[in-house]
Length: 369
Image 1 (tube, rainbow, N blue to C red):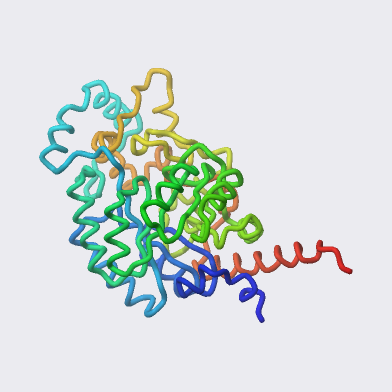
Image 2: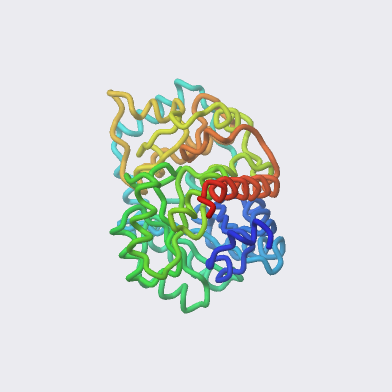
């Protein structure tokens, strides 16, 4: 039996994967590479227009063949009902906030965006979520992961469609809610993680979620970037590990050079939790953007979705023109291990080899009778 086979957990059998490595990415190519390498690719579609989702999923299916993969949706509560309500809310954004954003544009000499961008043209609404969900439910995808919100009716519909439901949770309370909703797999995401996150650290959260999960498999997430950390997750009782930040260094991600250089230079202490990205607490790599919003004279970030309604056009321009001081991305404390670019398949192979080595070290510590 190969070393990889020895740590093929029950969730691998359930999902039909060779390695219990779950990889989240907004890049279709990265998600495909993870699945082809024996892991479970998770393609983030929360930033995609509903009419584009079927074609993207079809392309992903073509790229992976029969290998399983999931898509990830954000379903936060409290959003406007539809575009009309969103436009009314946009019109009510305070003048002081608009002036602050315009001052950032002038101070850093950001040229106007010339390309369409989700956040410059879209405000998250319940109608948008419903359309995204419909597009996913009718597509050839194996699983649906839900983050920042867990409508019970959504979990029920996903399960009824024959797809696996994965729920990202940041506390035991959220885990109990996900279990009550019928989630098939829990992803216990600690505050070490990049993106929207709660206040509990990964090593404290994962055992608590496992304790309440019963027979439902738990995947560990948050600050994981090495095989030793995957082995530690397995030792805690998790059936796999979920990685996000690691794939920002995948060649297939085509991370813009200015952003890649910032990520490579960053250590764990160079990430911050801020509301300046979306209006909800979100861990990002520190930049002049997060610093500006943290300044004493800065206005408080607006709640979701109005922060993106306020900043979306400027963020699109910063990304398009790679305005180096301002570029940032959601990134976890595991960014310390992002030291360059490599194909996603090589990252998977490295993680597997590191996990083998870590488990061998653990086995060597066992007393011999």
